[in-house]
Image (cartoon, rainbow, N blue to C red; front, side):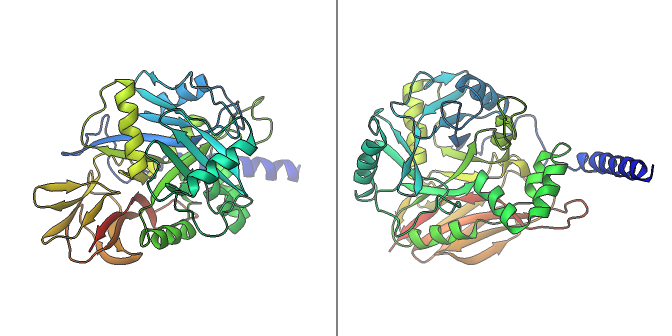
Length: 402
């Protein structure tokens, strides 16, 4: 009887706590039915590193596309693992969603995401892929204009890159959803289990309380950006297969939920028109050139954020290489003032040179270097947690040359 009473008490307490945290709003900015683009640029949201049942995913391409639409994405890139002669049937517009068919391939002990604008494959088997990818990586930075080669999860256990980063690599994943969860598990199994327990009541909170800064990836970015142009990405690594037998019981976390956690926000000077061929090139070039920022969308819709490098009669996007001129300015604007304490941090060559508590920033640039921005917020998480600093937005660097 005592055991039954104890179990009943624990269950009631669990559900009461669940109802309590269900009321917690993770968004740090006021939600809007339809958030506006910034005044000068168009913001398009999308995800990379997505798996279907062709490889390690739990659902068909059609199901994943439907989930992406529900998550209000503008573009999606399939990256099934070691699938050769990748089918391009789904590479088109699906309503307002632009879909790319890329691939993710084993290379040495790591994984590389590869996409070709000309639909050139990596070969018919893993041996062919090794040769093709090795050739791409050995080229000079930016030499291949028609393909995109990204190092996935550079420090994920079992898939870590070792040695120097090759010059032919376009960039790497600064954020990887699965790597972040694995890191949280290794740091505190109890905290991770607690997040799993509260997930049904508030999925965003369950992830936010586990989130830690990707310090190794940031250090790599700051090191490489002082040597050459490099681009960083957010990868969802969505497969909806975090638990065994997911195909038969439950897809967890769902594709839709994974797509809502984090994404890449392209900033384009002209709108997407709905023409597949021209829009595909626009999105590809923005991803190739680093004209975007990464955001934890669960903290609030960042649409309307903009950061540009301004000189006389010219405006430069993130990822741009620009020669230093007089009166050069870095302009930053948030979509609205966060309700929680926040700061916009400007980094030059990996060192924080300014921390500003204003949603509109004009910062003079007087020295060459690689400049990037992080927007950090400090929400009060419900008990048993407390205030926590979390980066909401990460930009790609601006490369200012002497």
